[in-house]
Image (tube, rainbow, N blue to C red; front, top):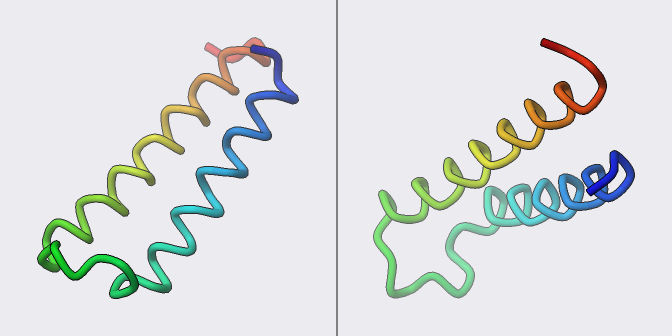
Length: 61
């Protein structure tokens, strides 16, 4: 994966996370509020991992 591909994946995940943050009650009738929050938190953690990977790919330590 190169940096451009990584940026594309991050943008998709960020778009999904933003949508779910703003629309928590759409299509989630089978989930409680804690599960909805955990899902969004998980997406934020995934973005943080991608940020770390991006940093390493750019030569960061």
